[in-house]
Amino acid sequence: VKIGPDGSKAGGFYGVQDDPDNTGSYVAVNKSASLSNLTRGTITFWTKFDTQKNTFVTLLDTFQKTGENPPGTDIGTPGTWSINTNYLGSDRLFIFDDSGVKRQTIDFGDNFAFLDVLKGLSSWNHYAITWDGSTIRGYLNGLEVSTASQANFAKLTLGYYLAIGANGHNSVPEGASSQGSAYPNHGFTNGALDDIRIYNRALNAAEVAGLY
Image (tube, rainbow, N blue to C red; front, side, top):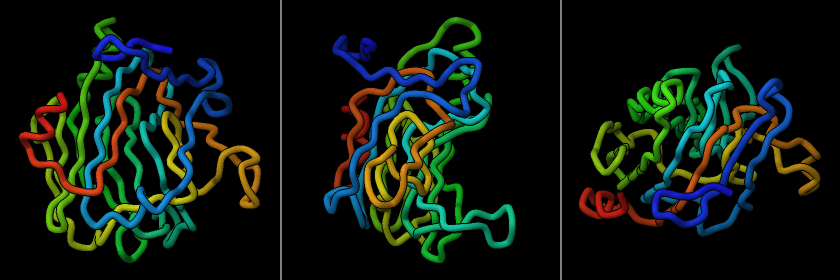
């Protein structure tokens, strides 16, 4: 348990420091109609990075990857998405488009958050994504930082489930269903997440700023 930006409890998420590709903590949110097939919506959350040990860090993930075509190009269930980054890169929103091809849409430009960890200055940052049927917008600490056309992205939806604090992709939580016993085993956040929200409408800029 961590202390969130408002002083209340927040969730801490960690992978094994010396073996980050095998064991770590995460939360799985079951797939539901209220979180799926959203043609308009908003995702918001706070995060704070404590360490930067993994080469691949995932904050929220609901990808449902089905293969690669051609090799090296991920394909999957249209509308499933992930917010992740590579080492010392910025967090980005990836979505499988209407044809099932993985696309980068939003770049938060938050490289400073990872560099601050190395300086011992880690702090909480607020992230938001909105989509209104025409434009996808990314906000960092209440300010719009990135936009993308929503053309070719009819909706955002969940795959098997929503993984918080780890990379889930097309697997289900350990022993959770007949889909198998696979579970998130890499991309652990190594930090904290708090106040994760998904709305079924696109908040406007003033509403997003009011959450920061």
